[in-house]
Image (cartoon, rainbow, N blue to C red):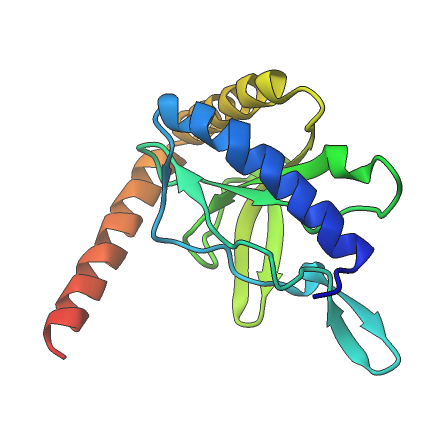
Length: 177
């Protein structure tokens, strides 16, 4: 099986994340969630023959979370291809409620992840995988800061209610089948 340079870099990033960062985050209370990050046009580039994905066959759409409705995603496919590019990737903190109206004070902290039928809110942050211990601290601190910002604006309670309603509706719809 032949790998492209982009796939090689993605696999190297995932190795560092899965081998060190995720186990450390699990010790801090993060768990794999049921919700997967949706694919957006931002995950593709336009060529003469149409939209081509930046992501690869190795991309994991898994998200992680603590007790709150804010999901952590490791974007290992987005980035440049150069010799030491494997050291850099992005973390995205996502709100899983589609088309949610954020308060104006949170705009800019969160930006839109546009999908086919609407949008989700995300906060994107680059991380340098050369220092995985530092990455864990920064990822966790940023998560906590974002939760505090959402709580301060009264959004956190509303998101928790909406998320529990969505779960309840999916349980009710699933039991009828």
